[in-house]
Amino acid sequence: MAIRGWAKFAWQADYGQFYLIDGDDPAFQAPTEITAEMERRSLAVPAAGLVIYTHDCLQQHIRIAIHDSEPDHAPVEAMSGKPWTRVETAQACFPSRRFTISSPSAPHPLPGGPVFFLDAATVTARISWMEFQGSRDDSVPVEPDVIEIALWAPR
Image (cartoon, rainbow, N blue to C red; front, top):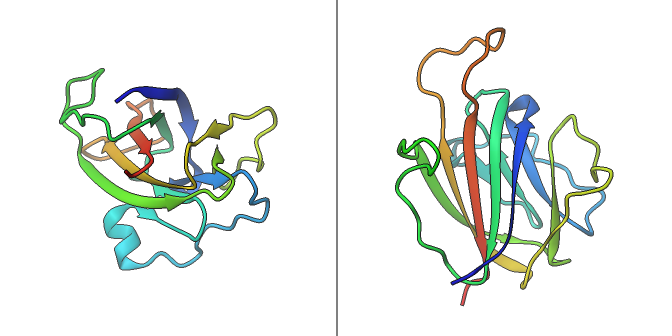
């Protein structure tokens, strides 16, 4: 199992969500109705792409890693050693075999990238969240939520 590529972002996810959007989908629309299942899992899987919901924190550290096969999954977040507050796995489709990251207030596509390339149109995505626990006040600095996304082609 080898890592094919990765990136880390300090991100601001307006409206508690961000998107992995297929490279050939300029008309991407996130769901406007959030179902109980989407809320429970903190994600939505449209026909193409992936919508990831955050836990009401405006700031996130997002890590995206593309692997050639299913990677080992650490039970804790690597930098802090704290356990993940939740983990979900889903199948996602990117027909162009590439995607970009975006959010409600970001232009799509983002000028200059980033663009991620995949080995297959259908991938498994494992999303791990380490979310701030307690009351939040976005008017004062808080530790950002950490969201790690591992992607690989199912074998």
